Length: 240
Image 1 (cartoon, rainbow, N blue to C red):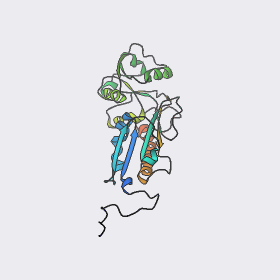
Image 2 (tube, helix red, strand yellow):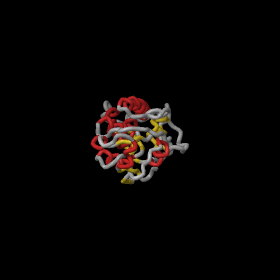
Image 3 (tube, helix red, strand yellow):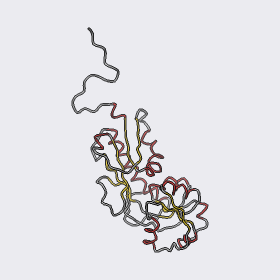
Image 4 (cartoon, helix red, strand yellow):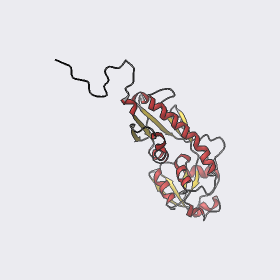
């Protein structure tokens, strides 16, 4: 009895250790939700251009994974200042600086005006306390709105509902589009950062290595974009 032909794409046996071409058509990314929404997704088309058959999966979260590169995952982690954090390639440091809608900026002449405005707070982080302690600016008398998700803070700022503390990676697109402005400094370093933990350099399949290289190049270019916008970076901060 004659053997049935192999289904299309099987191509017979592969040598041990040779990656399947099909596996190189899938990229899985695990990244913090707000970073993915505000930094990664708006620019993702530049990576996908020329890769029409790539299957892309993005999972929001800030947890580590076992054997990420071997399993085909690219993993980005948000690390708080003071935490040792995981090993990996630094994408950006995230100092804090005031941002607001252009319509609100016209009412502000300097940091002292913050005490007469509504401040937008992210409930999981003492951002305004850190900024006040480092800047020495009094916030007594300021109003307050707080949110459980940092993306809500940014949305509220764009809607003119108050003044938020921006992190470069989360507000760059809105600053360039004119939906947010930085009315004044200072930008306060807090040690927070985004780190690419997988794949490590030279690890993973072709699409993973290509994504790593693209990600690092994008992050490196952000500093110049922010400087053109007049964001007052503190000394010693690397990247955006």
